[in-house]
Length: 400
Image 1 (cartoon, rainbow, N blue to C red):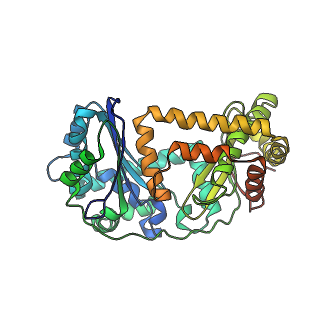
Image 2 (image 1 turned 135 degrees about the vertical axis):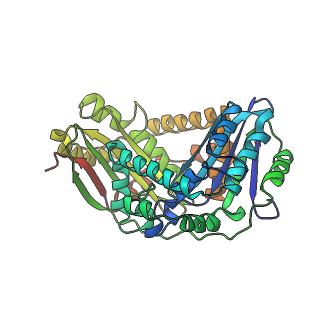
Image 3 (image 1 turned 90 degrees about the horizontal axis):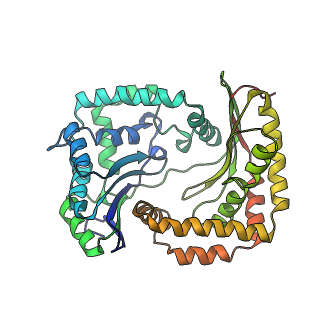
């Protein structure tokens, strides 16, 4: 750590040609109160709109002159900025990133212009059924709670934002104690520390922000809309990062609905033709988790799809045996090892591990834990999930 509390991590890979620099800020839509909803995402946009030394066009030109990959995104509990460049350009990339993160002006003319852009982004998401269904799901699973809010905000909150409000949120959350910088590629740790000392020494220490509480509730929400397909998410309360079931429930998800050979893909798509796409997913947070199944089907088949999903969960549990478990664990192990070939994946793992576990988890440790998982562990985790309150959200038509 730097003296201001900034956490720096490196995954040194001397034979790689590129370096990924990833900066994680411990803030997202979950940290916003109702009036602030959408602030994190708005700030992410504003940081590209001009600093003391560059206007928005010069920022874009500076990034593109390096010929790398630069972007940012806002989630429910984190905001991330990253740059993937040739190893000789890592200092230039970090200088640009530090400039936008530390020196953005929040110009009021640019703010109003960007407000209009984000309102269009929100409108676009509302017109994208397979996108907005996930917002419906979180809103139903966590009603009237911060975790249930739309990451983009609402038309009302976006319209009401002022420079003073956004700056106040930015100054509170964008500090050294709330930030992790990770590097993956041909850069040694001391070199990375030196770069951060050069470009981030002026970052204020700030204070750790407590994670706002959330309480999974579940329930049903059916939103009628004229669509060619009815969008469906069925979900349950899952586990947090520190739970003993963290890995077993991921194993079950992989078996149930991740990939072409998964149980749901074979049953619902290949054998019954009820859908084009179907998948299961896990979302993890520090205090809780989500297990969900997403699919879309014709309005006439939506009701049958929901009934079949409930039955197939039970059937999948009954059919899971040690041979299938071994195959599933092997699939996860291969994916884990293949990520070793990407600096982007390595940098993501560094920030992910430090933020969620407070330490780095080597692949060998994860693989050892995976291979120790028993059939009983997986079934116990899955049964616990499916005993929680169901959250069912449907966007479209056709449910009786």
